[in-house]
Each structure stands twice: as structure tokens, then as C-alpha cells.
Image (cartoon, rainbow, N blue to C red):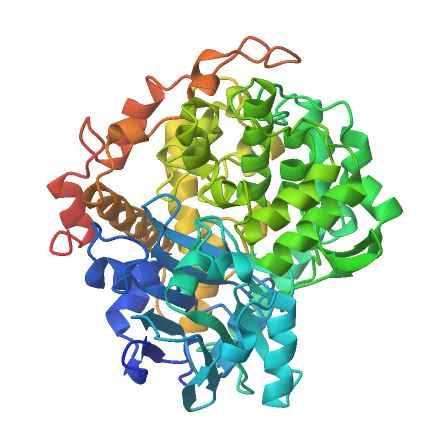
Length: 597
């Protein structure tokens, strides 16, 4: 293992041929794409035809760590799964924490590229200097928890870290995710379904050699500085630590931007009953942390006689306010079941909310009503096993609503369900949603930081001023952060210079602020080019009609909709794209990806 934060190995796994091959990590990729999401995007762009079906055996499924993954730098635990999404048709990356990425690096692998399709269920075992494709027939049909336990028993090692799919991924649900460490999810875009399409049940990793860094003394100094700043900013001592990610629910509700009843409203009267504070007082068992994380925003809770991970803020919103439900235990149980079955909680809850509105308006015959908490568990289980109406819900809200003639009731962008912030009250976040290169998403450039939290600057959420520029900056920075292997929550205390300093100290590369943002911009443009070649156009850079035509009714943002123009044109111009949102040859040459395009 080199002393630059990288293990130095990309593992190529061909499931059709049942072969594995180790390849050196190109130095040019480290400088231009950093690692993680960035290098995964580069590999996919090089090797996958954007026009193929996501379930084609030629699609790739790429597990990728960054140079900061597994180091002692705070919150350096993340890895990405990159593929062509069966939900959206875009290139996508799903980011997860926990300990799997760290263990993969310790086993000697930066990136695992999975191609082909096995003729029967298999799993991949990775240890130091060894990669084996093994029979997974005994694990077929198991939940993620059952499969993890069984694999650890069969390995004779409880320290093995496992990333696996559940029944939803096996049945190719387009909203299936990949679960590691019990409740950490590479959640969005249907990566679990691609894994299922390849007959790959799990990847299990075990290693004992942490990555070495180019400047250990510099890393120690940065670690101390960052810990101090995280504490001073309240990240490690405030609501995120005390009440988890759900600490933000009351703030969002008070701002009248908490989507309720499938985005028909923006304020939920029962918010106090499902808040992070309520969870701490009622069902919290203990806090959980990822590798090297002093924040410990994860939750272990107990509800309905069961114990499980979460629920996170987005899960509470999706099964709670979005479905008109204020029973925290019912919400938690639905979240546990998603973890077991391997389902993205945002897409699952939002798809149920869509079905509830369609039912109440008489567009479907099933009796599914807002506020019916008893229905959650049943509908999640039916979706995971594609049973009855669950077979249709497993396609996601857009395809479900389109089948019954009302795609406008799917609150999604590029067919991926939107998260828990109403863009009619946040113009910058609306632009981020609309232009996201993986579909409806806030973490691909979260404008909630400046528009709600005032980080790193405070922006008026209701105006267009500065929003195109800040959206671009956050999108490029997020791409770089994902590629580095560190958690996005660090943005609450750190900024561009800090990430550049960490990458420099770990890798030994001279990484300036401009270098870091340019790497992020390069990654963003490469994803955009893939999507264009897959058939996406300017018409896809928009929001659901409800958010463009139906004003909010309450609170400070009352009367507002999301204003697509002139924001979109200004954003395209800042990106160096033409009026149709296509990167210009000059932009591609400057980023050094003209030949790839």
C-alpha cells in the first residue's frame, strides 16, 4: 500500500467469466478526479454505452472509495456506488458511510468494478491480496440482516464488513438500495437493482492495513484543527449529535417548506410528534457513529418490539409528513423494514404518498389514504417482494403514476423522487433539484446550507440573486467531497481550502482550491455528457408542474412557486454551456475531457 492515502489497486470483476483482475490506479485519475465518485464516473463514461438498458450485463456497478476514506481525518468513512440508474436512466452515484468503505481500503482495494452477470447467485469475498467469487445460493431471498449474519458465520469472522441487497434488489425494484453495516445505505437511484440484475448478492471485505498518508504530521495537525472547528460550529455538540439528522425537521417545518401530503402542503401540524427531539425522548436506544466520526448522527431505536437503525430525517419525512402520518413508531418500523428489504426510504415513502393522493382522487381503486399509518408496513413489504400493488410501486412514483395517466402527481425530477425540502420556498434548492445530474436530489449540491443554515453565507431563499453561482459552486464542491471520501456534513464547518488541504496532506499532491473545484466541475460535466448521450435534454431540467404552477399557501413563502426562468439560463451560462444546456467545446477543452466527450 502506497503512502498517498490510496491502496493503489482497482479490482476488475467479471461475473460472466467469473474472473478477477487487479489493475494499478492511474496517477492521472488521482489528480483529475481525486477518487470515489469521480473515478467511478470516469470508468463508467469510458466503458458503458449511455444508451444501454441499466439491467444489461454490460452496465457496470462500481464500488469506489476516496483517498480520505479510512484515514483518521474526521468523518473520512464514505464510499460511492456508481452505475447507470434503472430509476432515472442517468449516470448515478449512491453514497454511504459506516465502516464498509474503510474496510475495503484496508483490504487493499480502492475501487471494485463489477461487470457481466453470474449465471447463479454469487457473492464476492475480499481480503488482503485475495478476491474470490463464491456461491450465494444459500443466501437467496434473505434480508440484508440475515445475509450479513450468514456471511459472517460462513467466514468465521464477525469483523467482516458486508454490503448486500435484500429481496427488493433481487426482484429488480427500481428503488432498491445497497445496505452496509445494518442500516447504512447506498440509497438512491436503484443501485441495488443493478446489483440484483448481476446476480450479485453481497460483497464482504476484511483487512487490517489502514492507508498510509504522505504527510502524517500534517494530517494530525489538520485532524486537531478540524475537530476544534466541528466543536465550535456545534456540529459535534449541537442538534445533529443530540437528536440526529431529524433535528432539522422542526426548523424546516417552521419555515413552511416541509413537504406534506405529496407536496400539496408545506407545513405539518404533527411535526412535534415525529421530530428528532421526540425520537430522543421516546424510542432512542443509542447514538451510532461511522468510522472516525465524532458527530455520531446515526440512531439505533426501538419501536413495535423491534430494534433497528434510524430513522433519519428523510425517512421520517417520507413516511411521516409526506404521507400525513404522525406516529413515530409506525414510521420507524417502516424504516426498519426498508433496511431489511433493501429499499430507498425517500423513494419508497414518496411513492406511497403519490399513491395516497391518487387513491383519494379516485385514480386507482386501492384504498390508500393519507394518515393511514397501518398501511405503511404492508405497502413497504408488498413493494419489497413485488406482491400485488407492490409490483407497481417497486417501479417508483413516476412510472406508477404514469401507468394510471397522472405522471404529474409524481414529485420527482428525471423520475427520481424529491427529498424533504419544498423548493417553492428555496429558489436555489429548486435550481439544484432541476439541474441535478442524477435526478431529484439535494445532496448533489445542497443549497439548504446557505438558504436555511446560512453556511457559508446567508442567502435570501426567496430571491434569485446569487443562486445560479452558488448552485454551481455547491454542485462542484459536492462532487469533489464525494470523490475524496469524506462526509458532506463537514460543510457545516469547513470550506474549499480545508478539503484541498486534507487531500494534499493525505495524497502528497499539490491540490489548490481551484484544483479541487475544477476536479468537481470536471466530474459534473462528465456526468452531464453521459446523460445527454443517454437522451436527456433541457426539457428534463425542470420540476414537477405542481411546484411551477401551484403557489404555497401558508407562512412566509406563501404565494410562491419555483421560478425556472431566468435562473436556468443564468446557470447554463455560468457553467459554460450553450442555451440548450450542452457543454461547449471550449468548456470541455478547458476541463481536459474533450476527447472523452
